[in-house]
Amino acid sequence: MARGEALLVLEDGYTLRGRSYGAIGTTVGEAVFTTGMTGYQETLTDPSYHRQVVVATAPHIGNTGVNDEDDESDRIWVAGYVVRDPARIASNWRATGDLEERLVAEKIVGICEVDTRALTRHLRERGAMRVGISSEGIDPTTLLNRVLASPLMVGANLSAEVTTPQPYVVPAEGEHRFTIAALDLGVKRNTPRRLAARGVQTHVLPANATIDDVVATGADALFLSNGPGDPATADGPVALTREALQRRIPVFGICFGQQILGRALGFGTYKLLYGHRGINQPVLDRATGRVEVTAHNHGFAVDAPRETVTETEFGAVEVSHICLNDGVVEGLRCRDVPAFSVQYHPEAAAGPHDADYLFDRLVTLIEGAR
Image (cartoon, rainbow, N blue to C red; front, side, top):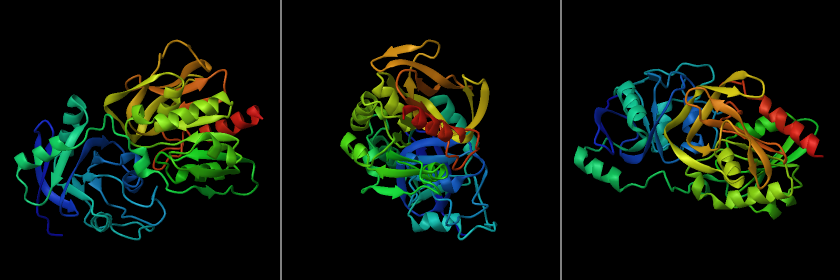
């Protein structure tokens, strides 16, 4: 494929020149990097990456093409894609198409043949920041001005932009054991699938759902999904979660959902320097001492005391999991109400299956609440 020139400019002026990849055009977003060596299709279609330009640290991207089964939503959500060496040929028995052809079809602007390791080191040292990519011949100064005029991720309320417009139901597989209301803040398709495998019917509700909407489903529990943006802006989901806790409805949150539960319990949230993104992040389960290899995609975290139990309006809360790379809070457990959360992705799409047991823990929590 003939490739024209392309330009990448970070908001601090850091500039890389490469070749066009995907659609021709100009895009801006927050530059973040992901360390997964596989799972690019699940990454690109994860709504949590809305308004972010993803840098792939794995050098070869597109080797296995794309297929009709691994999408985590109905579209690609990333604002742009940065890779080092795009595959010349897609080769996999499951492939139904070529990655770059899909990027072009969905108008995703990217850049290739750049030093993604150098770019990743820059982001690690200086933090995630706004970035622009252009393959339209724009000069660096003009692109930098566009970047500086683009919105920050801090203060961004994005769940309403990725949520389902209408409720829908994912039925249980086999015997119907329980019903869950899932607040769609950017939910991935594999989450209700993992619940369905346990006999759980999931009612997926829009991000603006109320406690009456939850109760109307006959839900045995409330699930708070992953999603994009700043959790400090998600006042509606926080209020809903507080009402669920007051009624002692079991609550399980993942990723953005943990941040919502954390806020409902009275904790603050903050932006990480460059976040955790990838499918190889080590997390310690403090209850068992087990180290789990986990899938992450978050740029914000809960600000909770790691070494002490905190007394909240809803009783005692402890930090159940921590990241072994940097000590970030990766899990919360309520002792006096039926609620818990993790900061990572137990649905493992893409990623390891070490944390799949958390869906069993939710089922146990429901059984105990009954």
